[in-house]
Length: 423
Image (tube, rainbow, N blue to C red; front, side, top):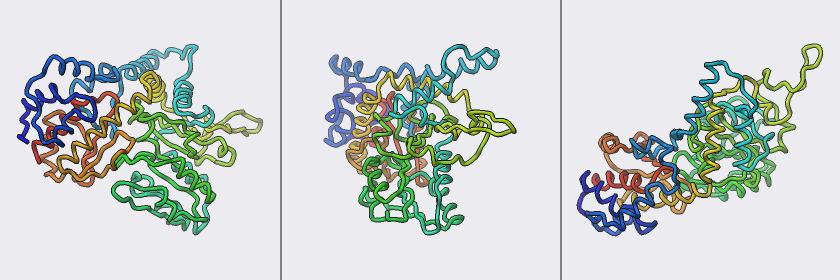
């Protein structure tokens, strides 16, 4: 295949890079070893017009005017309606206007989250970070020396930090399940789970390679051994339809700043209703008060709101409410169909270029990771010059790209085109 210079790359992706999946796009042309067409036909132009923005959301994301932003797994850009909600909150605070007769920022965020992700409102707390949620779970469990926690090596670093500290303080054991070809199965967890397992913890969708766990199967395994299942859902929620109760998970933590397209500082925490009575907060404060009693005594909340011990972040909650409305309007099923298909095409294109894939095939998530085998700094500069945003991991050896609702095939082709010129 002849190398693509910048001019031919832009021309050919416009002309031929937007055919229907899986036959179209640069990925398929690379796999076939053919050179793309050099001019766009009227039919191709019409196809591009209809496929440039399959979900009709790109005008709401100004980042698309500047970048092929394939980095939502790091930080998701906010759409215009979320920006407007933040402006409205800031303006109201600046002018000290009352809250009006509508829902408070917290009520709107909790209601939107529960409705979109299959939970009851009293099962949802709003924390500050995803890590807060797992710390609350770890603090609430009655650990005994010799107990164990089972995680896998595709988890986020905060989980290892938390449980290594618990090992030192409580004498429990952290068991780490290795991955094979970017996959960890329920059977792999089963080999390390026993009667002393108190908790199985997974990143529902891995931040490292996008691998997506089968939560119902893991839930069945955990419960069969008297253990609980925690899911770090920050890379999952917003990328496919979810009903948290049907997934069987006991606890799940997320945050607004990735695939929910909200902001930092508003981290929804799901606690299955059955656990609310026995779970104690890990800290206490004025927001937990349900009723003031004589003698400086208090009756505390019993819903998941009991984990909200202090003042909340009203700006991020306002962003969350608007973002959840935006997601609901677009439709999680449509988002999943669009992004997972494009991620599959990206994976196929990287594989055809000889990259070592870390993301398994037919993986239902929008994240693709691979070892590029190129000089890191040279590749990073080439991607930046083309206006492509991704994340490098493992000291630059691993490239992680993420396809969001606003991405299109031209974004994917831009990334593959840079790689094709450099291999």
